[in-house]
Length: 224
Image (tube, rainbow, N blue to C red; front, top):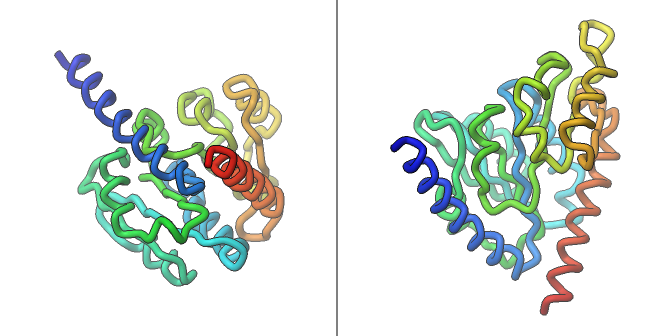
């Protein structure tokens, strides 16, 4: 019974997600699902990304959190539209939550929507929310064992950001083992080493994101 119920939930979610993809695709909007543990640096990465790109493209953010709006308040200081979703204890966002949030945005004016998912390496990976791609953030301080312990969230990612590399000398993090595991789990994913504090590697991240957004625009224009 539990398996059937879960299958039904995922089937309904995927139907809504497909509708969102079609609607966003028709307008050439790139949607990114940002995943990672609490404290991995997702919000700081997002702040840096907005500061770097907001003057060259129109960006909106959907913030997922259990109860508070603290991250949304941080993002709002960047001067971009932000919609808060509180899950009330739920461990992930789903497509219906995102659909409701999108109703509060002027989609026709947007190039990019970044959805910061609830901090969790398990449940969010199972739910398509209408995104073009998933990006997973892993902090050096979390340990190199996380990709093997939580493979799905890394397998589905089109880019994995290893954050806080400036702390590498002060940890026992095995970079070689982490890179080998990530390459094995998701061989096609981009692996980006960054420090949101020092700025190291962020230009590579911005370049990767710009390229993906441009590809989406090109496909959308070709379909018109």
